[in-house]
Image 1 (cartoon, rainbow, N blue to C red):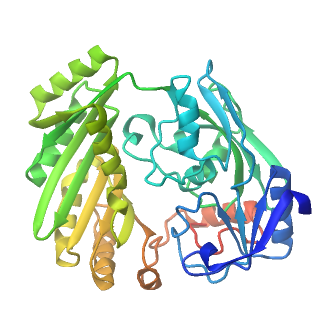
Image 2 (image 1 turned 120 degrees about the horizontal axis):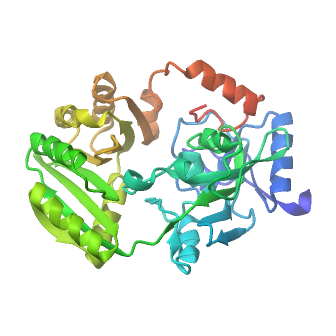
Image 3 (image 1 turned 90 degrees about the horizontal axis):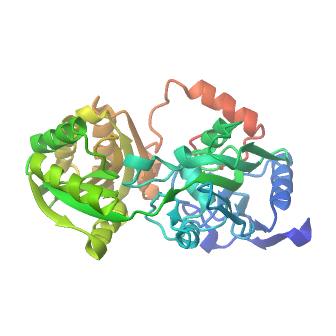
Length: 406
């Protein structure tokens, strides 16, 4: 196994939330990775899985990390079945590189990430998604099959390589969003979509909270089929702005017809396409990560968006800066809180006490904030089944080093 695993001592550059790992291992084959996992399990080594390293600050602060297990050298498999609109790819391949390759055949994996270093394994582990979730869902929804390395040293496959083959389909879904706390994805197969022929984005004027709710209801009741319908709220320096961005992408004729209909239904303040449109959506994807502070993922029933915005308005007494980027029709989004740490903690507490929101999870924050606020929040009613799932996949409890969620 030694020749198939690169080993080195951990350094401060490898630290996770300030905790330096004892050792960093980079297997070059799935088999070697599975062997490393089995050895770590046998020796009870607290292990963190690392892909591109862009989301290592997500989760609780680990008490110790004996081992960082990197997927960076885990092969470069990329099998594109363009006739079937599917692709199988190694976990260490970057999302950006995958889509660059797929573009040569006029296809892509319709998932956005704010982080250039995002890998396929990290994408699944965090279930990270952006505005296109409105139409295409999250990585979990696009996943057809996975190959996993388990802590007992086995490599197992679930699902298939074509859309109609759903045998074992849910195993990949279990792993989605688990932050590497159950098993390690070494390879994944996704369903793809054709690249967008024509696209246009319209900015809907929403001066007040009630205008946001009105826009959401009108859009939901219409026959329009946008690929994204995003809400942007910016509260800073005593000012609050509400905006909704609606994107249509189809054939040129269909895109134009839908854009014209939306303009008849709602007060459209501007329309963009081309490079300007691409920049609008890049800004929307990155808005919650641009400045120091805490980034929080939350969800709510779409019909309660006005209540959610009212709670955010109340958070201004705690934080000078509050930014929300959210999927208006889905009821989920990212919040950024700036300002002093006690204010960030108070704002998160307000969100969790409100019955307008369902889940409030701190993704990225300072060590000081994490020391006083549980990033995962109160235990969920289904905590016992989740704990049983963790014991089944990882009996020694080595994966995740206590960062959660399992």
